[in-house]
Amino acid sequence: MLVGQYGKRPKKLKNLEVFIKGWRPIEGWMIQDENKEFVLPTHHSILGKKFYKAYKYSTQRSFVFLLISMLLICAALIFRPTTLIVQHISLFMMLLLVISIDMWLSIKSLNSCKQKVEFLFEIQKSFKGVFLLFIPFFCITLLLQFYFSDQLGSFEAFVMYYGNYYPEIDLSSFWRFLIGPLLHGDINHWLVNIVLTILFASMMPKVNKFFIFYVFYIGAVGSHIVTFFVHKLFNTPFDALLGASGGAYTLIAVTICQLFQKKHSNVALSLVALVIFIELSVSLLPNNVSHSAHLSGFSLGILLYTTKKALICRQV
Image (cartoon, rainbow, N blue to C red):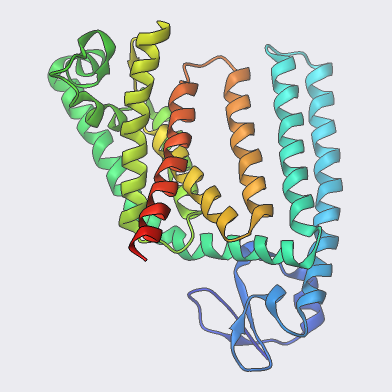
């Protein structure tokens, strides 16, 4: 029997039982079935249930280890008080809850386990292409930001001249919404956005990478426009908006919609829990995060997906 990982040459399996016990979905293994075709381990017509039972056992064991680790960390925070101790403990508890939900949804049945395995395999397949798409884009925009900031004397001046600086926006300067998502407050802001964007873009199943970029940029620009009008209506304390996190939320929203359509509700619910955790996390800690940009980006993702689906149905 042959086994192989995505993008690598197959090799002969020496010990099936050892392989089943040590198998992890994130590793991207495929195994030869009775028809000599390579399938995901949980999809194997004969061995699928064995892989599922092994994964279920290892997941339960990992949860116990995770629970103990979380309790030790919380105990350390309690006995060695730091600033924002309540917020940090709350974050760890929420993280434990999200991971617990994901683990339970992935092992409650063989079918749910198959969904999780397929999802992780698709991420592996698309990660390289998404990485090569977004890394140059983010690096070039960062270098241009440094260059123009130097030319204008400061980053603040650059934002005021070309970014989404609200006091300068009027009907003749809506072009600022096209540039605003390309700017970031600092390296940490840039790193967070690039990690979220690549992670969420890799989750989109079987779509053209240029469509991924289109969804991302439309969502980023759209979230900046919506957030500007929220500022005008409610007089929010922000005077500018930077970053493309709204576009990342558009990507994850489209992914969740696709998963629900494919009847992969277990994975979709895990992603919903992840999004809620991220938003609650940034709410608990002091920062300048715009939740309206995230929410509007997510809403635009749902709108884009439903619009695209309606157009396809109309063409048919």
